[in-house]
Amino acid sequence: MEGDENKAEVMRAVVANLDIAGHNLGCPVVLIHHTRKMDKLAVHRQRTTSDVRGSNVLTSGSSVIILVEKQKSRVSWEAHFTVRCEDSWYQKFDTMCCVVDWREQTPPGEAMQLVDPDELSQDKGGRKPVKSDPEIDADVLSKVRESVVPISQNKLRKLVGGRKERVDAAIRRLLDAGSIHVPRNGKGFLAGPDPDRKPG
Image 1: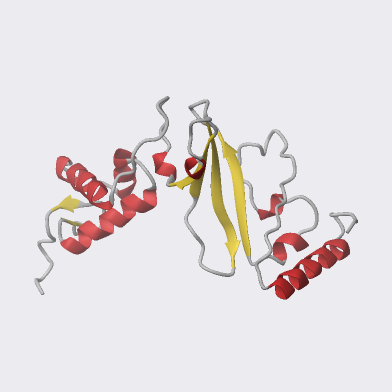
Image 2 (image 1 turned 45 degrees about the horizontal axis):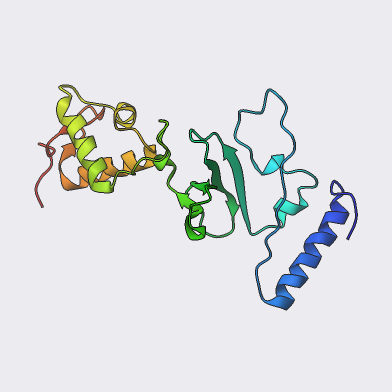
C-alpha cells in the first residue's frame, strides 16, 4: 500500500487494514515507526507521541504505545535503550532499559536483556547490582537515624540514590512499620515510632 504518511485519510486506511489483518489472524499487530528528526533545541528533551512522524492517526488508533530511545553506554560492547510505555488502554509498565551485548562469545539467549534502569552503572565497569527492597529500607532508615533534625523526602532521595519511586516506597514501608515517623509540624522524618500515635 502506498501513500503520504502525513495524510490522515491514507493512514486511516492503513490502520483499518491492520485491524482487519489482526482480527482475521487472531493475533496482535505490532507496527514499528520512528519519530521526526529533532531540532538542536529539542534534542535533549524526552520524546513523546507527538514526535511520531506523519499523521497522528497511527498513535490515536493504537492500544499500546511503546517508545524506545538509544542511550549512551559506558562500555563499547553494549548498546543501551530505554523502553517506556507512553500510552496504553491497559496497565502501564515501568520504564525499563534494554541492554544489547554484541560480543561474539555472548550466548544468543543472553544477548538482549530488559533490566531495571538502576542497574546501569555510571562507571566504566558496566552494570551494577540493583538494591533489593530490604536494602533500600535499611539505607533509608540509616540516613534518618544519622540526621539529628527531621530529614526531608527530597534529601532522602538524593542520599539513597536510585529511582525515587523505590525510595518513596521504602519510606512508606518504614512509616507503616513504625520505624520512622513524621514530627508534629508535618515536615520531614525522624527515627522511631510516633510518640503521639496510640497503639492498636
